[in-house]
Length: 399
Ligand code: GLY
Image (cartoon, rainbow, N blue to C red; front, side, top):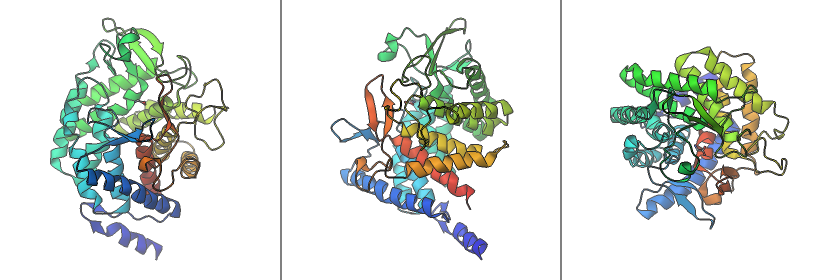
């Protein structure tokens, strides 16, 4: 009987997306909360007559809205896509389309590497849920743009330019940050859409060199590796957003776990799975990992336990763990159990906002960059995005 009910739920078509069956009360309650909280933000945006893109709260408590070129511009549209998928609420479809299409110019962003975050969260989800072929062109053009940042000598994509801003003051030549692993998803996607293996080859080259240079023997990673553009040799191993060059910045660790998990998904190469597990094991076995599994912003921050947590690192790790738990891996169920425990913490009043508060973001207590004195103990749209993705992945496994 239960199977028949599930079949009937899964089979109901609403618009372009199949209505998702949710049998777990925890997931249902969180989706309902997200529908109410994000719904209030959508209402505000729609009433403004503009296409606003919420990122975080400013120091005065008002919402910071970004332009298409900000590395975080894909996450709010992406959260609306996940909400549409999980709730089956048809009125969300035109909104998700509008917020996504407002970002199309991002496909030409050649001056930073984050085009992968932007395009995959927005157009990637849009294509998956609508199959609109026009979105394929955006994804492929974005991958071509990202490929212009590939540097043959180092075999990596250059993350940041060094001709302006605070990056120009660090003495770097070709900085590559661990975050860049996330942008590889766009390249793999473009190869699948076109059959052109050049994108795939760049992604694999980047993943391999990063694995070689960016990790310490214990599985923790450096935030920034600076390469010599002429020789391809490493010039510096630094941090930008962590506590110290030799510390373990938690969101960097999250990008590594998620990034190598996706590399294994896309290539089937076991070494990437092993890297993802090693990076996660570092966090799991860390003596200072709190009981509720929400990491400190840096696992070497000097005042632990009186340091801030970073919810964005937690949601990204939780989402990656749900995927890891579906892979050919020893003790796969333990990865899901760990993610489930993280999600319980995240959805508790300690981290999840009250309806109508927190600038209509779902989660509180993330950290953007303490060294830059920016976005400290605030909501962040990428924390919410990976929370929604984790809910979706958890739900798929519990059908
Ligand atoms: N990708 C930038 C950050 O993680 O803050």
